[in-house]
Amino acid sequence: MDIKIKNNILAIVTTDESKIIGGDAPVFLAKDEKERENIAILLSKITLGMIHELENGCYVIVRH
Amino acid sequence: MLKYNYIIIPSIILGIISRLSMLRVDYRQYPSYPQGVFSHFTLGIVSSSLGAVALPALLEKEFSAVTFLALAAQQFREVRNLERQSLENIDKTELVARGTAYIEDIAKAFEARNYMTMMTSLFVSLAIFIFDKLLIRSYSILLGGILGLLIIVLFHKIVSRELIGEIADIYPAKISFKGPILTVNGIGITNIGLTESREIFLEKGMAVEIVPKNQNAVVTLSNLGQRKAIEHNVAIQLGIRKDLDQPDFAPYISRDPDTGNLVFVIVSMENDIEYLILAVKRTLVLESAKRKPLSSYVGKKAAD
Image (cartoon, rainbow over all chains, first blue to last red; front, top):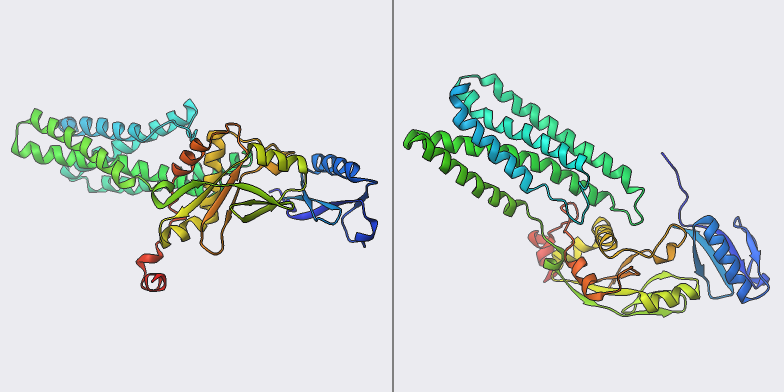
């Protein structure tokens, strides 16, 4: 039997350091919008997760 | 038992015809392989034989032979387990899974088809036996055959399941974004983070609204297994843009909590809304999802 963890935030990508105060997901800091999107795409390819936007400068990668 | 050949042989033939008529290889792609067809065909022969010899066995006062029918029932239940297991195993390899409810329905259908084959043979043998008492033998075989064909048609009618198009109306719907939230006709579905993906949804995505015709349909369509069946059916017929590393383009179905309407959005390979509607309409209403609250006292009163 294979066990998967679903609907869990795998990573956070942000341009705004002040929005993050920790937690168990790794945080990737990007210098601008373009880099943020690029990191998010690369991470989603690695984790096979989906990119969601929080509208505050943060992306979260979640595997569904 | 050679003296009952005139009963047994036509009954077996009719039983096999009955099984063959239910063994369609179509878009559901199951059983799509020659092996699958062959094993079900062989089982069909076995079940029709069992149905055909039941009556001659009784006529010979071989009552214990009838217990073989019980053995057959056991065997057919095994067929159901087998189908379920194999479909569950391959479901993991599907981009858009069938879902357990759909699998359960398919497995049940396979079991039932064997019973229907057996019943057809049994009825034909009974008919030939009765007609043989009244008419000459060749006429009785002919009449038994005709009756068998009628039974096959009747069985098809009885077991034919409803389609989504019969319990709901389907209309094209409009895709838009509220910030990152993908919405169809104002109903929020999911959060799509990437602007690139949002553009693809707006450009190539298709959406429909599924409006249930009555309270029964509202409850049936709320079933998650039924929704998965719709997603799967559309995805295999129209093709799907999604890949393992592109989960954004999975098909989504959401429910409007106010009305019970469903909205369905998909980015498919074939961008043709007309056929999307047709594919949704032609999805089976699953037996395991079907509910009839309007047949209950409480449901009927509450719907007033």
